[in-house]
Image (cartoon, rainbow, N blue to C red):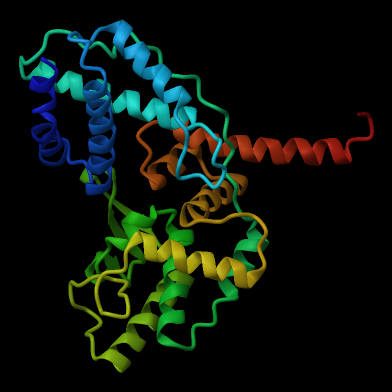
Length: 308
């Protein structure tokens, strides 16, 4: 039975990409989670039936597992990671049921671990402006870097959405950009004047120095080999910029997206409008940014109010 179920992993991953429209990175994460469970099955051949007891045994294994990717060698994997793995396996077994391969999902009865409350780190408006202004765009690649982070901060788009954008996705005249988000869902976002000018400057330099046309439907941001810049490369570029700025808080491209949301809400933007801009499926995902604003408000209140 176990080997029979494992044989459906490859068609399941194809199903996620073809019918669910999941991105390559998301599909890869699902495959990793399901394959890890398959390895656990192989290590426990005495269990012929995957039932609630076996699933709880696997859950105990996950809780005890060490996070080998962490610098802290003794840390266990996060509850959020365990929750994601359980979600992947629930989806896999629902796929098996849908295709009449199994009749029950052993993961449905297992509660998802309670998540740690996490408030994302972000830069203040002044810090964000200082970081962006520190990128001197007088050379081709510094102009590109300035354009990338101006665009992420201006639109609140995911780094994968910006990395995947093409030149023709930007309507320079109306200041709009089309991005493809999770599940291949398209969004059209406003893009600020500073970001537009930064992109124009970069593409002009690219045309002048590399002979690449400004208006072809080619990747918007290129690496030194004139290929599409990857999300990993963008993260590394930002890491170097942050170090040069002397920013103590760890900042990733996603932190810039956090800053966009927080700064918009602080300035009075409607929560549902920000949800739409971010491409969040659930309003609760966007609401975490209001917690940052409220926390900031409470600190101001505690500091200023005469009667503590």
